[in-house]
Length: 149
Image (cartoon, rainbow, N blue to C red; front, side, top):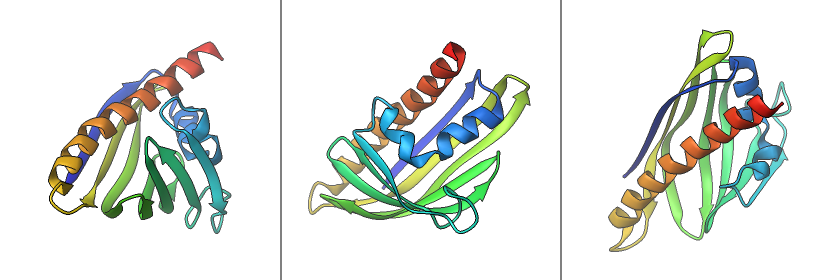
């Protein structure tokens, strides 16, 4: 089972952090993301509950459905499908807590299993490590971009 858990305090207002994390089509602007697109709009907001996003990270192509959208504190998602490997996804959640006007605590969790005969456990371990590095890199990029603005 992969278990990615990143806790980070961003020097970014909560509204800016949430807005950036919820703009699915713009994920391609993050260094770790090769391609991103909004495939289906959400039911009440463009990027809200029900939205389907396609995200390519490294060799993975992920189709992720937004399951919780609580502006500006929570964004949950479920990996519905993945290529070139199958992923069973249990949890995908980004929770934001306002520290003060300019700082936000982020708690990002993603858990699941990569199905690959014989090597699945090893791939899960690597995915956990690389995923945590990638999530943290994405949060730091949001923070840097916000300071530059």
